[in-house]
Each structure stands twice: as C-alpha cells, then as structure tokens.
Image 1 (cartoon, one colour):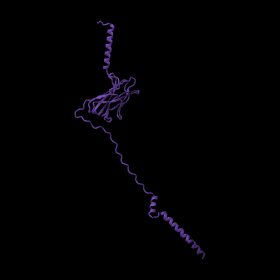
Image 2: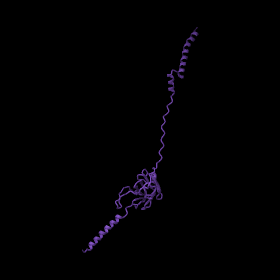
Image 3: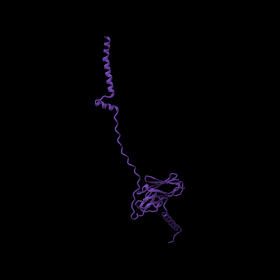
Image 4: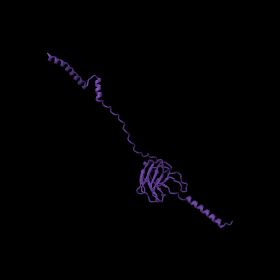
Length: 237
C-alpha cells in the first residue's frame, strides 16, 4: 500500500504527540516541600530531619514554614538544628514554626530539626504551610493529592523502614506539672466585742462600772433630800 505525503505527516504528528505525553507524565512533579532523614527507621532515636521547600513565587521570597507534627511526635521532642540565616524556631500547640528574613526570590528554603525518637509507623506526614514575604501561603497539607502530573498540594511524607530488633518506645517528654495548691485555712473566729462582754456580765447577775456609778449618785440625792428639812427645822428652833 502506497502512503501519501499527507498520511505520513499525520503519522509523524501522532507519534510526536504520544512521545510528548509520555515525557510529561514521566517528568518531575511540581514544587513541593520534601523531607528526608539520616535514619528513616521506626523507633530510631536522635534523628535529623531535613526539609526542602521549593519556591513557587517569582515576586517574593519564602519567610516561614509552619509544620503540624504527625501522631507520635510531640513539640517538646523537636529541636532546631539549622536553617536559613536569621531564621528562628518556635514550638506551637501541634508542631512548630521556622521563620525569619525572606530568602532570595526564587530560592528554595532548607532547614533541619532533630527529633528525640520517631514513632513506630510506616510513614510520617508533615503538613506544612509555606509563607512568602508578600502574604502568599502555599498549603502542603493534602494526603495523596498529587495525580502524577505535578498537580495537587500533597503534604511531605517520610517513609520509614521497620524498627530494629529490640527497639522500644521511650517514655514521652513531660513538662513539669504545677505544684498542688495548699488547702484553704478556715478564718479565725471573731473575738467578742465589749458590748457582748457587758451583756454576759449582766446575764450572770453582776453590775458594770456604769451601774455602780448610777447607784452611788442616787444615794447622794436621797441623803441630801433627807438632810435639807432637818437643817431648816434646826434653824427655826
């Protein structure tokens, strides 16, 4: 069968399109936050995790990375190891944040932390919020979101080998608990007032100092009343 030039051109275009699709599907995924470890093994101790956040902005540099820790790792078990110049580390309720001056526009941000012990798991997911100097935030928090063509916001995942024979889970780091408060003491009973003391004396049959004074004054009045007519009678005689 003789093929015309037009049919040959159509065949070449189809082959080129097919090859292009294969190359695109085999190419690298779009920029993500990636994580790797010096000891990617369950129950490994004193492990250094290195994160690389690829820049996806041509206008601003990366300024922060907020990480939510997977189950089995608590913020108290994570320490800052290294990162961009001027960046600092701070623990949060469910993870940590590394942040500082913006790296150069288009430049990736890489940092590392040390973990006291990795949990007994097959993989660890580190959901990450990637912030830029202009306020943009890339949310690498989804699980299995990538479709193989560089789309989706998949969270960085660290796959772990099986734990070494004899490895055990260390006791979790604990923060100091507050000291128990002392029980409240009962208030002292109020001391009796002078009026109550006086009332008690009256009820027991005694007289107060004021009562004796009034009684003496009354006696003087009676004596004066008796003496007055006697003195007038003596003058008349």
